[in-house]
Image (cartoon, rainbow, N blue to C red; front, side, top):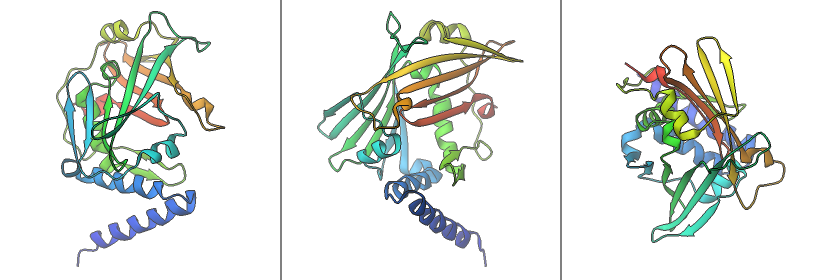
Length: 250
């Protein structure tokens, strides 16, 4: 008898119980259930790319309150829509003293919820796509389905091992810098140079003790020889993102 399905069931039950014991909160169960959906990406999700990138949830599980519970941050805008509500988080480029850069450079992450307050769409604006191109953003989301779970840190480490590779051009440094402007700092790391940017979340409220989460440090790495963008990492409204673009290329 094939024991693999049984092992997966027990592993799922174990992780759900563990999530409850660690947090005492039901939102960790819903977050884990959403993670399980990633394993059947096309059944539960779809993507749309226009001037922004949108991940659509076909069978939504997470509630709006779960995002506040997980991030400890509140959205810049909270507006009603015919479907439910729309939350938009605006991130503004700042200098070393957290003062806004002039002329203004900003991007947003947007969440849409249905009338039951469950998430139905998650979008990223065009400026964000300069450092996370749509093809790479989609395949990195797909890779979460095979991600390893760090129970202690409650983090996912996505893997490209079981994914098809893609053919796509990596953005050039000149193009990225034209959109983001000059960085706060440039680090020399051998074959790559890392450009560091700071973006500050415009938010009406932050839960006490989590004030540092409003500041997002974005690091983008360029290959010195090819001048291509090869890696991006940052934290956006409590969501940590790190993409090594080379892993997804043919």
